[in-house]
Length: 217
Image 1 (cartoon, helix red, strand yellow):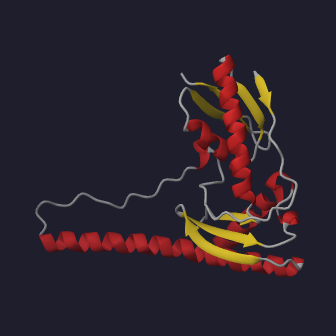
Image 2 (cartoon, helix red, strand yellow; image 1 turned 180 degrees about the vertical axis):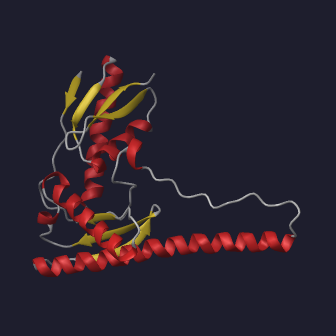
């Protein structure tokens, strides 16, 4: 079985990419599906009742997006407080993208908030999710990014995934990657699953959980 290493990002990142990714958790563990509130209509109901039901469904959808944006605002306030305590300068954007709340921090000298292989960023994200939970009582899938780290790392991991796929196709043997965070695994799964003839799966337990890329059955 081939072992493939992952390039590291240790230099400060200057560019911001606002594309959001359904992160935090690999394919088999973290893909949360939206609740289905649609119920079958009763054939005996009048047309005006059906119209009211449609309008109610739209209101529920709007309320859901509003709640996600509220989570991003709570997160932005929390992160702003952290920056003040740490005496770091940064611009904070809050938004909803990909069906989840997103907070992005842009500024110079923020690398310490990312840490090696994004370890500090992951910890900050969990603290921010906890802050949201304490205010709303609802678990959050907030995505926190600092200095465009996630977008840059996503591109690197796409290259790692493609390289692993090439080796699998060339030699017909599974390729075992280095241990990765949930975010990194999700990035690799997405790339591999978009290619024919190969499949990916995670093995092991945190913090040593990793991906194996293998020929498709």
